[in-house]
Amino acid sequence: MVTGGVGFAAVSLCVFATVAFGETWMYRHLTALGAYLAWTVLFILLGGGVLGSLVIGKWRLPKFYLLFAAAFFMYAVGWVASYSMFSGRVGEWLGSVTGSILMAAVIALGFGTLRSVLNHSVVLFAANSIGYFTGSALNNSVGGRTGMLLWGLMYGLCLGTGIGAVLCLAQTPSAKS
Image 1 (cartoon, one colour):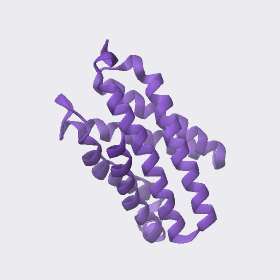
Image 2 (spheres, rainbow, N blue to C red):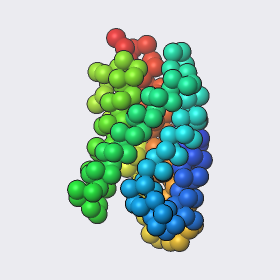
Image 3 (cartoon, one colour):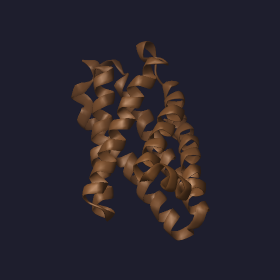
């Protein structure tokens, strides 16, 4: 969990740095959809390497990249779709729920632990929500680029810890029985 949290915090800090320093440029040249797609790809490329180190056995790199890419992409689709349908706090909470469930389902499917989807979803939802909303509050209180970087750090630390926990749970022998 520590590796997931600290490693994904570094990944998230890198991604959020592109938001803090390049969001306007990205929106202008890539559109909002293109910017979100670019940020998703960055999370997948950087996060897959960090989180892949937590996986034992058959899902070692590069196979884990495929699983993580599918899981994080579905998370992003769930988040963006929910937020697009219901903007503001409602959209953010629905995005956290939807994204967490979709990520948990893909991870559980990949590790053959489908009966653990609910447990994995709860862990990811709690970690995701704590990181996202605490980071958002930090961003709102500090503001500017520093606030955005603090948001990324908090989001990555919490979500990475949650993903690390889910990967650990998915690989326990009792998870498959």
